[in-house]
Every structure is written in structure tokens, then in C-alpha cells.
Image (cartoon, rainbow, N blue to C red; front, side, top):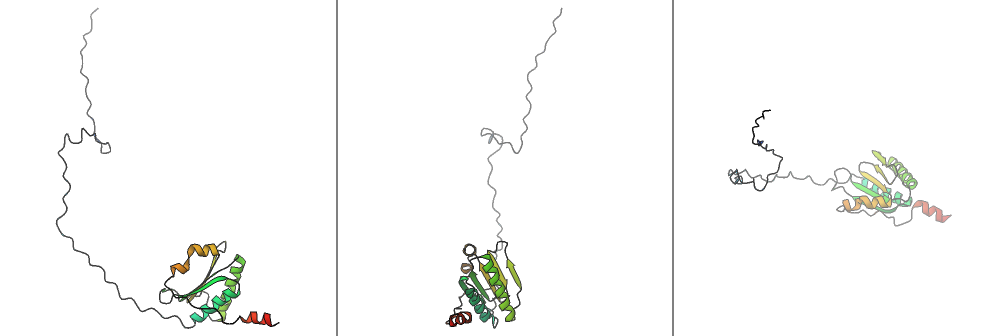
Length: 191
């Protein structure tokens, strides 16, 4: 039987495809290519931007007549309804939205809702239209917006979290405390 002649073939090397995502080996990094020069910075100068000139600010608007009296009466009403830490802030020169902010803390959702109803009634008596009333689901923050005066009633922890007094720290505080007890208290002590 005749033997078949076998031819020996040398193993064929397959070319390796380079992909962009494949990292280069340290040995291959500079073998084929010359060292890369950093890109030259453009020599053309850019036009320097001048700071924008600010438009002159309008003079602070004066508080709406009667708004201060309404804010003080609202603060007194909050105090009469056993709200604590009542503050009145004059933001007429700071805020374009309102003139006075009244802030107080209530002890229960029932007290806060009832006090907000009393403030709304006071607003109607003083011809201040209640623009918006907002009560969150758990009544931790209730709000009455009369445009010129905004009344915020908070649960104490929520008040500490939002800290409106700090946010409006530039606003002067308005004194609202009575020098004599309210009419309801005088009638109760006279009897």
C-alpha cells in the first residue's frame, strides 16, 4: 500500500483587529506611532465678555395702606387663639409678591385650621379677599394668602424645618403685641 504524501503546512497567523475599545499594551503603545504632541492652543484671542450692566433697580415699593394694620390684627388673632411664637415680618421692600408675612405655630391640626378660618373671617371683615388657602394633608402647614398679607401657621417641627424667619432674615420685624388684654379677656375677667 502506498503511503500518502503529507505536506506540512505552516500555521497561518491571523491578523489581529484593533478596536477602539481594546486597551493598548504598554509594549505596543509607542512601537508603531511617533509620540503624540499635545494639541496647540488657538492663538486667536476671543473677545472678552464685558460684565452685563444691571438695569437700575426700582425703588422699594411702599406697603399697601392698611396692610400693616391687617397683619398686626391677624397676628393678635393668632395669639388669641393660643398660637405660639407669632412673628410679623415687613417684606414690602424685599418681596415683589407681598408686603407682610405673619408666621405662627399651632399645637394641633384642629387649632390651626380653626385659626385659619378666623383669619379668613377677619380678612372678609376688613375687605381683604382671600386669594388662596392651602392646607397640606396632615395640616402641618396651613396658609392664607391675602396678596398684601400672607399668614403661615406651622406645626413646630415643620416650622423649624422650613425656617421662614431665617429665609426672610433681612426683613424688619413688626411689633404686634397689645399693651392691654384683648376685649374677650377683659369681659371674662370682669364677670
